[in-house]
Length: 371
Image (cartoon, rainbow, N blue to C red):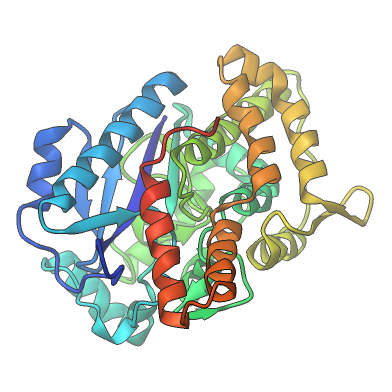
């Protein structure tokens, strides 16, 4: 397994999102740690990628070292990274597309839509050697994507306003083509036939331009989960990754026993995705079997019980059970809103309150695990 996190770079004191990345930051991060670091669409962003991890101690160590390396490299320029899916008050018209043919071509292709993409996400890769199994599990695990999104929400603000959504990033990302839930395919060959229609037509170069909430990776033999916001606290990232890995193992276990997870139409799962986008963990998702709304913390408890044999087999019970901590203390989105409202109650201006949110994000990005 492996994880990719996308960070936003801000001025340490003012909290403002930078418009131009100082030269040498990527090289400095590479020198401090062996993981992957790369540019993103806008100069204010960068992406890290862990190595191939075989257990969760390894994964946690890689993420922690990379976050520290980015923090140290940014500090030399008076900057800091924030692990959040949107910046609380950045103006979109001030952002610059990164140098490089790939990013310039993407901006040219997407036109005005590209300016909305000052957003960051968490991607989790899980190695699955058999491509047919990859496609099969993709269709089944989609049921749980709303639950994972709800646990990860970190984008309640956009251009200085409370959007009323816990994951405004989702609203922005959905403006791209080829997003949302994947189609259901019976085999790898069927998946490839559909992708190849767009490739032969010259619409896309390969499946990396298909930005579904979950997809088979173009570069690696993995099933890549992309639906989640970027959790601000590292332990929350590890928890989401552990849940995703365990859910895939649970579905594989059912398959070995000649069973399957029940299937529901995409429009029903999309309804739960909207509810996760709107409310995060603070309300309910639909239990389709019961045809009723159930509070997210109750569904999380059910999910923990469901994957317990898999968490025990993969030695990640504590990582999976951390989902209870998220439900108890709230996601990054709840934390941001609480900081903002408390600052206003103490007499801060709106600008000062939004900067207080950024300062809290900076602190939480490199904070130690919850006690």
